[in-house]
Image 1 (cartoon, rainbow, N blue to C red):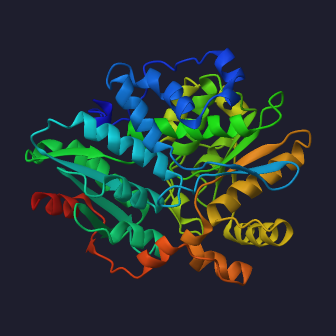
Image 2: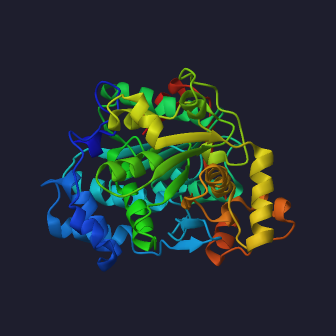
Image 3: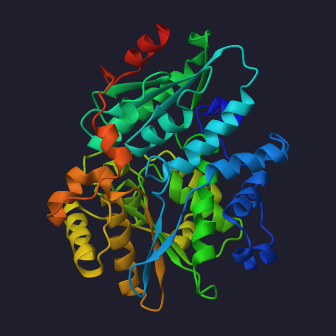
Length: 416
């Protein structure tokens, strides 16, 4: 039901009734298991009897059938590379898992299934790829005009068929609010079966836990768990990591690495939680002023702020710092960060400066080629573009421009 509905009837987010606890012995033996076996063990308590075990096994096998390596940058920092999937971004795991689960759940649904998704960049491409040409499913992607990279825009606007792109005159927060509003008015569209593919959907959010188990599996010093720095926009990825830790995965500390959109850093550093209008940055996929998934983080800690602040810290990295560290890491270590990974790297580096006995991992969420128009001027040279991306860049954009209000989206849906 939660996967199908996307948003709860009371406009809130779905959350597990309880957080399953993994067997400590299983975690101790994690190096003995395949990626597929780990994913199955982690997700099956959340699925229960909703999907047959044999089918769930097949779904996780198709979800994680690409490399997710932990790459050492220097003696104290490693990068977990989540960009080896089909759209070169971490959203591939959640989108692939959700599309397969949703396909099973709605297999006998008589109405046309309409997936609504707001994207700040990578979600759109991953969802488009995951649902492309799926029978009886239409996907409508809302993205903020002029605020996604060239590659991101091509990935979400050029597929056609059942994938429809709406270019919104506004911010990601505007897109997200439009989607949420439509869900509260679902009864006005009796001909459609509406659901969501954002990280507000549990089937997109929960499988993101896999990353952190894979990171720990490859972490050599099991006696000293890593600090993990997560580039954070809508806070779905870091929330999944925190959920994994609450289930028993050893993580020393989490850093919510944010750009200039500092709603959460401001709050965790002692001020009120104040929603701000998103501002554009080099790390555009994190340009979120009202992160939806932060309420889930509060729920994991049962609204106990002292416990939350003990386990999580947050920092805001500006564009000048982002560009400087991207250039520095490339020059010193020959490792090319994308702008979001650069935010995660610098946040971790700052934390380790004050905690010199610890070591950590930052999450590299996307291939730098997805942001070549930002990265190339910083490093002063061209990035090798994979053939698949070269081909996409030649395709024609197919998108409809709309205003940033729910009425515009409502009018579009009424014509479906």
